[in-house]
Length: 113
Image (tube, rainbow, N blue to C red):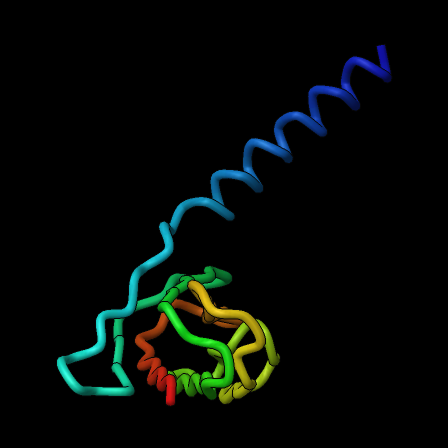
């Protein structure tokens, strides 16, 4: 009996977690013609994550900076509001923003140079 209850509890938790993790589809960053940076903005729910991706080439510098009204939104990869690294392999690269507080608006600036 206890095993069956535990199994049901674990199954319910997995359904809940998968619904939250996959609720936001990745968003493709569109750079303007001749531009090396793009600005995205929106609203993010409490405890939510929104991920963006863009194509980049080996040797380029990928930089992401996020700001929010609450001051509690951060770049997932760094735990900070700014993140930068050199691309090691060409292809799609992602950056996610995490909200650690209540729902808020945010602005994400991504550059690839």
